[in-house]
Image (cartoon, rainbow over all chains, first blue to last red; front, side, top):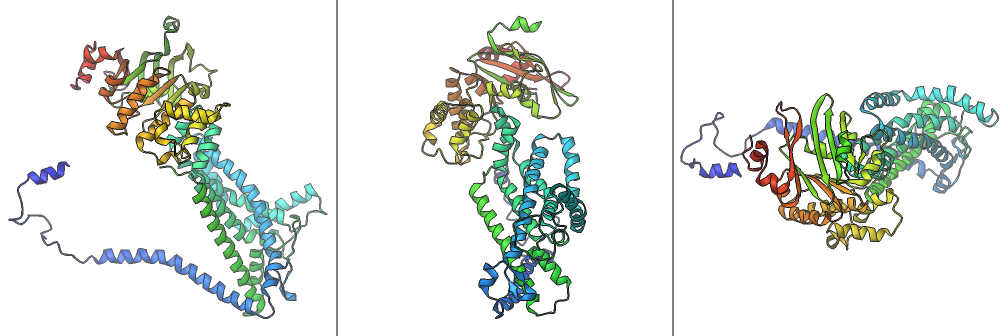
Length: 323
Length: 263
C-alpha cells in the first residue's frame, strides 16, 4: 500500500535513464547459464530415482517373464500351491510367502505397540530433558547392522525361547526368534517417525483439549494421535515394508529350508531368505532356479507396492487434517 | 490472612499476590484482582505486560509451559486452585477457555462439541447438548445442516463460535477468553461481542483484549495491566468499573493508555 502510494507520488522517471549500479536499462531476457545448469542438475537428481525404479522393474519383469513362460512352471502351481522345492521342480510361492508373513506379523506385534508407546511417551509425557536423552538412544538401535541382529536372534533370543517353551517345541532355527528381533530392529523406526508426526500436531490443539478438562491420556489418544494419523500410518507401513524386505536376520535365524507352516517355532525360509541363499550359492546363470529368484523378487516388489497403495488409501480416508 | 478478608463469596475468582515466573524472569508481579459472578471482566494493557499469562493462571494452563512457575493464590469460590491437592483437570472443567486463534479439532462439527462433554462423563442426550451448545454460541443456524462436516471447513468467525460452543458443552462456570477476536474481521468480532453479552447471563467471563474499544463495549469491569517501573514485570495497576476506567481513571498511566497518549 504505502509503496504504491509513494511511487504514485514520485515524479515520473520515463524521460531520464535511472542511474543504478548495474548500468542496465533493457528489460529483455539475459542468459543465466548457471541457473539452467542447476535446474538441469536438480531435475537429474529427481529423475535418477525414477530411472532406477524403472530399471529394477524392467530387470525383475524380464527375468520373471522367462521364469513364468518356462513350460516346467505353471502359474496355478506358483500361486496356489504350498511346496517350494526348486531342486524337485516344485514352485509354490506360498511356502515362502507364508513365512515372510509370519515373521513380519511377529515383528509388527513387537514394534507397533512398543514403538507407538515410546512415541506417545516421548512426545506427550517426557520432559524435554528426558526426550533429548531418550530419542537419540532409541535411534542408536536403528544403526545396529542387521547381521548383528541376526546373530543376536540366533545366539540370544533362540536359547531363551527354547528354555521357555522347551527344546522339543522350538527348533534351533525358527521364525519366532527372527520375528521378535526384527520387531526390535523396526521399533526405533516406528517410534521415531510416529514421534515426529505426534510432535508436529500444533500445540493449540492440545491446549484446546486440556482447556476442556481432558487428561493427558485423553489428549494423546483422542486428539493428538488422530491428528497425526497419516504420519503414524506411514510409519506403520514403512515398518511392514522393512519387515517384509528384511533379509539378514531371517537368513541367519529363521532357517534355510522352505516349509509351509503356521507354527512360529519351526524353521521356515522366507522370500528374502531364499533370494539371499540362492544368490550366494552356485546356481548357474539363466537356469530356472536363477530365474525363480527374480520371480520371488517381483512378488516382494508387488507386496510393498500394494502396501503403499493401501496406506495412501487409509491416510486419505481417515486422516484428520489440521491447518 | 488476606484470603479470608476477600472470600466473601461475592467474587467468583480472586487472585492474591500472584507472581508468575518464566525460569528466573518474573513476568507477572503481585497481581491482585477479583472477578464478579455473571460479569464480564476485561484485562487490557500493552503487549508483553503479562495479560495472557495472568489469564492462563486462572485455569492452570501455565502448567504446560515447562519453565513457568506460579506463586500466590487463585481462588475459585474460595478454593485455592494452586493448593497441592487440587487436580488441574478438574479446574479446567469448571473454568473453560477460548483461545486467540480459533482452534477447532480436526473432527466433525458435532464431535468438536460432543468430545469435551463425553470425556467428562456426560450421560444425557448428546444431540440435545450439542444443539443447545451450538445455539448458545449462536452458530447453530450456520452449521445445523453440516454437523458432520469438518470443523475446519467453517470460516474464522464461525470456527471461533464453534470453539465457544465446545467450551459451553462442558458447562463451566467461568469462560476465559484470550483475545478471542484478534484474528477475526469486524463483523465476526461484533457477533462474538453480542454473544458474550448473552453468555454473561449464565457464565462469568474474563477476556484479555488488545482492543480498548472492545473492552469498553463489552466489559463491566476492567483491569489495567502495565509493566512495572523497572520494565521487567507486568502488574495490574488499576481495577474498576469499565466506565470509570475509560472516563475517570485514577492512575495517570491508565489515562495515558486509554486516551492513546501512551508512552
